[in-house]
Length: 455
Image (cartoon, rainbow, N blue to C red; front, side):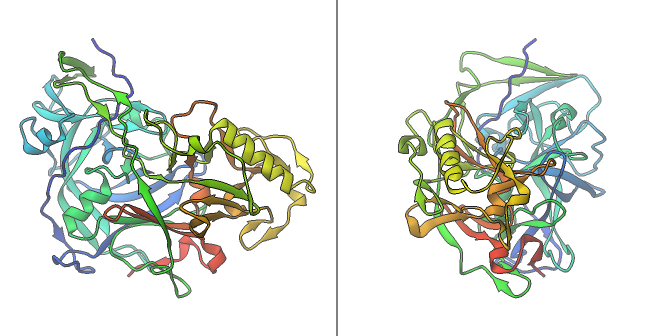
């Protein structure tokens, strides 16, 4: 009996879908111009969660947002009831195009969404815990709202949306009540590409992550970025290229071997050749870092992706805080401490190294009165300015800590921009033009993610 390692396979070609659409904003093909997902922050896990409707009869599904991953996965073990699901057969074109898929050839339990014979299989992964397993690829009804404010609705519906069945143990470590993960990656089977192909709008999405006790949004397609009170950011974003890590980094299978995996009563037979996971994360070209306008001395080679696929900078909604390679972390904290020399320090609070007495730090519209951190992208004209609200973390003991975490000396990625640094920033991921648009901190423009309006 083989034990499943933590796996995640590269995405394959997109399955084209026929859709039924409720009355909503029209795209060129008669479908909606955009669809949305509401976003909230889970205090206990620091994860960002969303809700959508799925199955027949439709039920609400709570899932964690992930800028990585290969496709949507949901728990099919715990009470998945639907009259509209269908397995993707091992010989189907979509399964063949996926190439890295296995085939579930035997299931000894009663047929269900998660237990189907001769069904294409993939490897859903909980990227928060790095646990993965095999699961059936199936289709079912998926509905998303087309408006956000004043209330979500009406719904746009895809009757045969492709996703992977996970197992209940994969949900361990997710926010309470979450039964899956929504992939927002560049993969062909992730939501941005499937939705664009399904509804006929542009292959792009905008992400606005909220702080705790507020609302945020993911907008797929062609929608104006309008916020109350009358703030339109559609024409004022700063753009930088989205990069692809070209190196495959994780070996998963062998050409000369057929392997059977056992998940409860389900047997997964893997066929094929050696394959590797191709990164589907969103990378950007970080060229340097400034603190209070002063250049931080960092090893520039760490900011580039080397021949082994190591280094570079990516964005992650699963990482709650920004994570830096050790020498970069040391340089940034040293530079920040120098600029904050007049403020009394406080004992370090894990996982942070640099903390201050929060009572001694002033407050501004853009958060604590601390030095700015600039992420220098193509040039100083394309800098992402990080203010105190996104750089500092208030702890329960009253300390105010610089929210960057030491990744050690040999991380796979040198800089991982975490969720806290992205909160109340509008980020547009244009997958056709391969560019990231960013607004910087919205309260500096007298609005927030909570004020996004569509409808």
